[in-house]
Each structure stands twice: as structure tokens, then as C-alpha cells.
Length: 338
Image 1 (cartoon, rainbow, N blue to C red):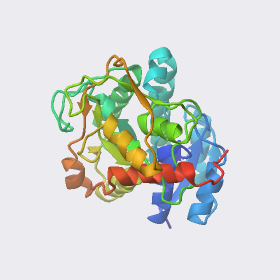
Image 2 (cartoon, helix red, strand yellow):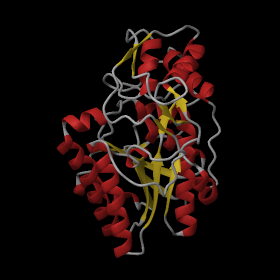
Image 3 (cartoon, helix red, strand yellow):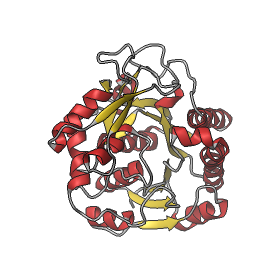
Image 4 (cartoon, rainbow, N blue to C red):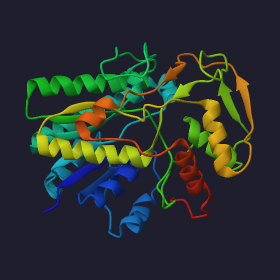
């Protein structure tokens, strides 16, 4: 019988791509999503990609009764926890909602898992736990900090996981610190499609390329970087999805946790990303330089060595491939799931 995996937030951007990767690897997946930041048509699209119906539960990770029902009805073997709020700016404006969803959601989920006797968990963390990095590339041993309530929630969740593991050695948790996921599935059927004005750089550029937004605002061009704009580590979402499959496989085989960066180890500036997307869409995209945003680090990119050593993980997509896949998603003409 195939290993059954619960994906909380499984209809979202990273969750949907990981769903496809897990199905391709032979896992049986159950999706839990409240569709607060995912389109209701995503499960139908996932069925089209994988050729099999999606087992979907529409519900909230904060709903303990819903979780208990899922564990009882589906005999779950492991969980990948994506469900969380993820906008830095929104977290500053509404920190309590972020504490409730991100921290409360993890605690409720882990309580339900423990009650069901399920102790294998892959957790979506973030490079935001490094705050403003002191040295580059950033290793997992770097000092931890945060520059927003969102970053605080990810750091707090990591600490909760560590303390739960110290109290009960049955826990085997893979903590994955994402850098900057971008791009889309090669089918062009799933990708990043924020419901509001995007908070992240590539989806914003994509909307400029599609004519939905007039131009890109570049926040500062006087950083100590090669062209003065901020430098980040962008990782293709399909590489990121593959990292989750490797993390889950390791947990199930080794019955021991791990904490790794998921990035490429290569930093690209805002203008480099803009140039690569201009190449993908075939025209120069307009931008303006504006004031820096408070709290933005000049540069942040991963040291991915531990992920290679522990999981055998290696990102394989170039920046040009990331941009081309995003433009394919935007420009396929396929009806976006709604």
C-alpha cells in the first residue's frame, strides 16, 4: 500500500507542485486547504496533470475536529505542512492573524498528529529566520533573527518543533528553509497566481509583462551589490518540490529529523531577474527606482551543502529556465483555475 501523505495547504503554489512530485514518486496524497490563497479549480487541474482524482478536504488547519477526522478516515502516515500566511507586509499590518494562523496552525496540527500516532512531518520554513545575514552564503548554523512578524512566526515554529522533539523522540521532522521559490510547472497548468497585488518579485514582474501592472518598482539601487539592487537566491518551484519528496523519503527511511536550506547557492539581483524575464517575454520591461524598504537585507543566498549531504538535493534549473516557465504559465492562454 502506498504511503499516505497529508498536504496542508496543498492547493497553494508550492503545495500543488509538491503534490504532483509526490504522485509521480508513488505517494498517495490527501489535500487539506481552506482556499484563502488558492483557486478552487486547482484540484481539477492537478487531476488533469496526474491523471487521477484528487482526494480533497476543504477545511482549516486550525480546526482540530477537521484534522482528527482526516487522520481517522485516511490513516495518514506523514504530513507536509504548507498551510500558512506568507506576506511580510501583511504580517506587519496584522501580526495577530499571523500568530494565530502560522503558530496556532502548527500547534493544532502537531497535537492532532500526536493523538493519531503520526510523527513524521515536513515543515515549510523560510530563509526569513536569518534576518539580515551576517555572512554569505548563509549556512544553517548562521545566527537566527527576524525582521517581520512573518519571520518571527517561522522562527517560533522551528523552536516549537525542536522543543516537541526534545520532549518526545518519536518526532522526526524535516525543517526546510526556503529561499525564494519562483517559476511554474512545465505543463503551464499550475504556477504562482496571487489573488491580490503580488508581494514577491517574480510574480510582480510577470504581471508587468502581462500588462496587468504598469511597471516594476525597484526598492533601492544603492546597496553594496554588483548593480546596487538587492540580491536573492531564486529556486525553481519544481526543484523545491523535489526537495520535499527527498525530505519525506529521508524521514520515513531514517526515522530522524533534519534541518536544511533549500536554495541554489547563487544570488541574483533585482535587475538581473528583470533582464532575464525581459528575455523570456521578448521585450524590455519598464521599471523605476524608488526608496529602499526598511528591513530589506542587501543580499541573501543559501549555502546548500547540507541539503546535498543529507538529502542528495541539488537544484537544477537556471534563472532563464525559471523565468521562461513563469512566462509559459502566464502566457499559455489556458484558463487559470478559478
